[in-house]
Image (cartoon, rainbow, N blue to C red; front, side, top):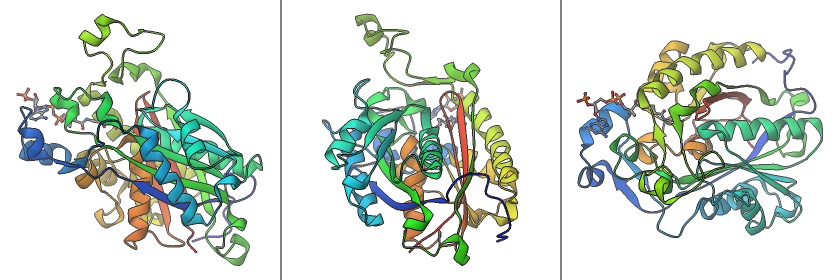
Length: 349
Ligand code: UT7
């Protein structure tokens, strides 16, 4: 890895110093869904790659999943909760409109000195949260920022709509962002990994109607009519989102690579948002990445929206597929329409 490259993320070097996850126990297979919907295991596997997903039990909210993930990330980093300066929760299924889901996660995780806010940028939320966290830590505004992707998407899905009900799953993943030098890892000056190198984030509001929960906000307040018309559930133009995703991933990846003066050949692991295996395969092919450099777990969890990337990072690290010094490309895309790419030289203790 060339070490004379100027890091485009200005300020002090920052890294992901801890990861944590939490998944609800209940597994729902494609066959389970085909008993209540006009669908089949064959169709779902061939069109999406998904085989099963986890579903949270009644009464469990996104923060209930995010809290154990946050606590696990702190334990992984060896950090006390009172040392956290900010908790950012990325979600498309917040506990409610206010207060922020992050407020409850911070409180219950014991982050008594932390501010807290939510990022509501569709499935791209984790990468947006990571960008905000990395920028703030690099600038010295904060030392430790917890970014928690937490989702109980099953609550905002119309379970009678086969075009969305088969895709999504519940889960949470958290990443602690800290200065590189404060972690126990070998620092950049000692020739170690450089941590988070840079981002490309974007938004195309013209595609807002392709993926949304139409009612429940100030634009279409809740009413009997909105409930009757199922307007509090996700509406998705799958074909449009598919076209957008297959186009934007390669473009955004190219931009972040250029910004960080790296090449596709430098990438050791591609960690895309887990929306559809066909989107992932098409993006990897456009980028020229071989399949062994692509991490997927959507087979087991479906699309967990803001939780998908931290869930992948945690599993990839546990499986030895993400090692110290590896260059990882994280790529999110979703409602907005938004997208976000991040390059990180992974650092492990
Ligand atoms: O996190 C980001 C958000 N979401 C995404 O990234 C999703 C992006 N889009 C997609 O992944 C795909 O568009 C879907 C998986 C949603 C749909 O796959 P597709 O290959 O685009 O299928 P389609 O919508 O073109 O439908 C093909 C056929 C249709 O039947 P006809 O008209 O050909 O007779 C559908 O009615 O498949 C039918 N169909 C289904 N059949 C069985 C649609 N959903 C299902 C289903 N089971 N669940």
